[in-house]
Image (cartoon, rainbow over all chains, first blue to last red; front, side):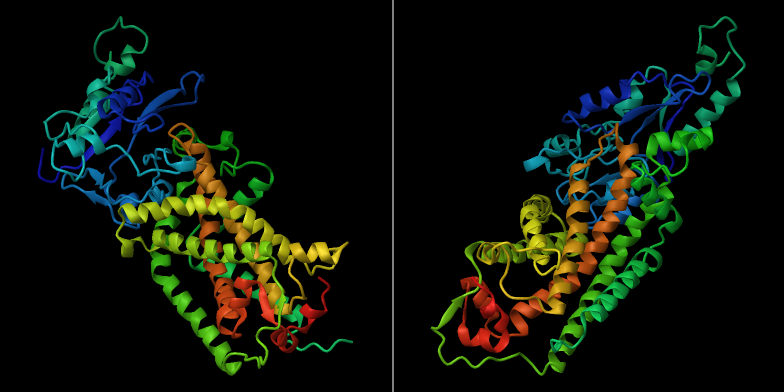
Length: 200
Length: 317
């Protein structure tokens, strides 16, 4: 990874089959409570031939993150590699980040009295939080810190069609470019969808 | 014809308050925000027609790319959402100025009125029960709750001062629950606000005076009550829906835009109601000596009423 790496997710809509494996892997890896989904899969134009496609969406770790700008208690911080994280101890659960986020990434458990919101939870790109790396506190509050262990985030690692790409933006871009260029080359007698997923 | 002793006639006062309201709305939506006002209008019209999604043009008319965006993330992010970011900054910087201006306004009023109204009371033990236990409960509880909602609401807005953490989080959470508890009190105050309305028929003064306040409103009091009703309704309705309508990952796109709009209405209501809250504090504590103890105990000296509120004595109990 270069010094100026910007860690990004990218979901290849030609490959995503809406298996929800990424959502389940994320929830399982981080032991998320029911009702909190750091990642979701949405199918667009469902049932319409040639127009239907699915996308896996979570926090996009924006370079100029609106959640970071709007937070009244400044709990957000952006790491050098571009991963947007937040400090749950400081979060007051006001929900401003939810209003500001274009992707609906912030999640709030409604586990308080009369269903009041708790502190915000969102995708950390499996990079934990401000607590000591791989400590018990970090694990309890933010889930696994797979990035510190040199691993790919759980969702991308789980993705069976490798639709979900993650890593340095330049590398992700290179992989996608290679995929686009390989369309039309490869095996001829392929099952349905194979050409889109892996090229001919 | 009864001599109008107030400094301003009722209709003039309504006109001025109405004009101020329009001006403040204009300021809020047009000048202090960069929201796409054309979109806001269309959205409001769609709400009246029962479409709460924020999608103001037919979904089918969108390009496939735009349809994808709307399905995934909700309609027209650029129309309102960036406003949350700006509103946060604006409120942090502008609200203290608004409060300072309001304080100066009431200070000027105090100076023009030549200080507090004073009443000569020679026999303080000769008192009249003006407020029933129920009325005192409603009035004082309303003041306490609104004060708490102000405090906790602004602890969110001015979060940089609190720095977050458990106490600030507790205040934010109780803002929602206390707001919920405010609804019955707000409903009673709303009823009290209309006690002088000409359409309000009182079949029995004895019964009605136990529920509603004795005496007649002065014009400014009535306007103050009506304004309180307008802006508190804005706050209660928007606050309740914001609290109740909470999107999860599967419903986000459908409800986020209406939540964004309601948050602005909530912001606007809280900014404008502060004027009337100042007015209440001014009239209860500052303008007349001895009024607040009367509201707390329910009894006011007879001489106090004779000199300042003779119509209360005339009203049958």
